[in-house]
Structure formats: structure tokens, C-alpha cells
Length: 290
Image (cartoon, rainbow, N blue to C red; front, side):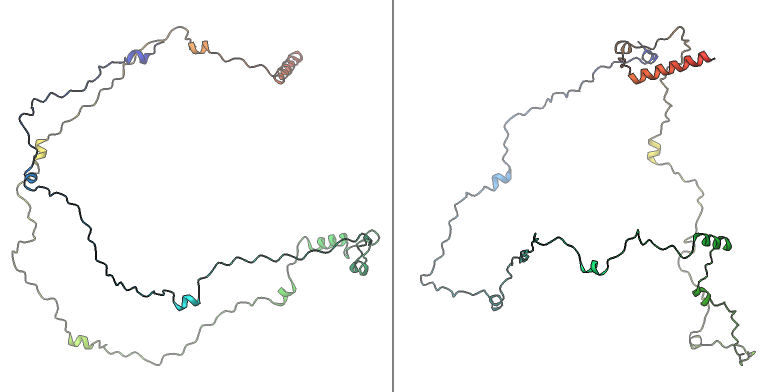
């Protein structure tokens, strides 16, 4: 089978690119070559001599020093701490209690003898003071509402907030005087305000003024004039033209792989067979009824 894509896009085989071999060098080594440098010929290495060990003369009458005791009085009195093994717990005493088989197994205690108790079957629990009917009657009278007032709430009621009266302040005795305020201080009297003094400028009076150029600035650089950009053309698409081919006849999509390797059918389950029989019986019954 051959598809339309394989028919249009044909594989193009290219030759293998071989490596470029370098040309042979025509320069050759001729004559005799001496690798001895001027430094080697001028400074010759000295021969190595065996070093003789110097023997120091030891005096015959050598006086030994007295031994130095490096242990201090503190170290001798307080020796270093030694690890002491932890003490083992004392074993408990041997239990000497045994069950005497000669005594009777009577577990009567003083508590049981003093408080014998009673039988709940002979002495049942007394009924409550208020019967269920009385409680339902009280609930009907209240209309299903429960009063939440307690004795503490009725006795200790919250205080009602009282309106605060404005504070009555006494009137001021001072009266404003229609006199001009004198704000003169010692600093103002000593340091007088001389105002802004004019500043004299020295140098070129035209310095710092922006002058508009009369001639257009040539902003083209050497790089811009040398390396001129080239406009690239859009790449043409290599997609083949659409063919108006009409597919006629029957189309078979079965492949050789499908025809060769088929899935084996699984054995039918008994439950599935039973369900199919039931469905067939139901359909036959519905057809007969109609």
C-alpha cells in the first residue's frame, strides 16, 4: 500500500560527506640541530656530594638533672572522677503467702456483713413524685415555652444606664484686650532679616544656555554605512497542491496484519448463556402477547 504522502514526499538520497584531508607539508627538517641553550652552556650544574653528619662531642662528666614532679598538690588530693557502676535495684522479699487448703473458701467480709443490701425484685425503685400526665398538663399550660428567669436573675438585675449631665465649668474672669501683639524676641533683635541679596555671576554669560543646532546632525556611523542590512524573502512552502481526486468504489480498510493475526474467541460463560436464554424467552413472550 502506498499513501498520498509517500507519493508526494519522495525521499532524496544524498552522498556521504567525506572529510577534507589536509595537504602535505613541503617544509622539511634539514641540517644539524643543537638543543643546548645559552643558559645551559653558561651555568653548568655542580656535582652532588654526600653530606657528612656532624658528630657533637659529648662531655664525659655528664651531670643528670633532678627529676621534676609534675603532679600538683590539688591533683594528688582530688584525683580524677572514676566511673562508678550504677547500683542494682534491691530484689523484693520472697513471697511466703500460700493458700491453705484446710480452710474453707468463705469470702465473707466485714463490709458485706455490715451492709447486707436488698433484693431489687422484692424492693423495686419507687415511682417519681410527678407523673407523666401532670408533666404534660404543665407543658400545655405554658404553651411549650420555658421560663429562663432564675432567682439570681430576678434578685440581681442589671443597672439601667443613666444619662450623663454636662460638666458645669466656671466662667473665665480674663477679658481679651484690643492691643497689638508684640512678638519681638532676642534672636530677632540680634539677627536682623536683611532679605535676599542679589548674586553676581562671573564667567561666560552664555554658559548653560541650550543652543539649537542650525545644521542637521549626521547620525550615520561607519558600521551603519559599511554593513547594509539585507531584506529577507519569505520562505516558500513545500506543501504539495491539493489534488481533486474523487475516491470511487468500495474501500477495504482491512490490513494484512488484521487478516493474519485474529483475536481468538473466548469460551462463553454459563451465566451469560443463561441470561441470553432468559432474554430470548422474554422477547418471544412479548411477541406472542402482541
